[in-house]
Structures are given as C-alpha cells and as structure tokens.
Length: 105
Image (cartoon, rainbow, N blue to C red; front, side):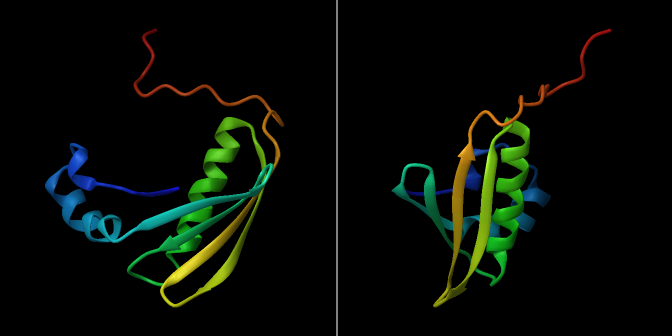
C-alpha cells in the first residue's frame, strides 16, 4: 500500500505550509505486511534520517492506542529508510482519552 500526505488538503497557516510543506510533499511511505502482525514501512524523504521521526510518531501512536509494538529502524540506502514493525498485542493497555478541545466544566 502506498500513500503520501497532501499538505494542500489541510487548512494550515502560511508559516506551517512553508516550513513543513517541503518535507511533507516529498515524503513517501510504503507499508508492506509480511505476516500476521509483522510489517515493514519504507520511508522516502528529502532528508536522510527522517525515518527516525516516523519511528517517534509511530511510538506515540502505539502508546496512545494501548498497543504493544516493537519498532526497529533498519537504516537506509538509495534515498529510503526501512522501519520494521511487529505488533505484539493490540490490547496491551487501555487507550488514553483524547479530546481535541477543552472540556466544559
């Protein structure tokens, strides 16, 4: 499965568009499932090392959703980096409550 992120589809401020737009426009992610719960994510970005940013985002998402996941940055070559994802338990802990805005008191 291949996908990209289109910054034009979001209502970001001009600063955010200029600052992050160049990174995101060139970001390509490809997810492959090798077996049940075992995936690899190929990250193609403008700057080397951006795969480490993706690993951090995936760790935060796994923590928020209560999943037990083993993530490994396998390094990269020829303009892409590979991340190994092993989903050990989808219900390891209860997910955190998420509110986009402040709650009324």
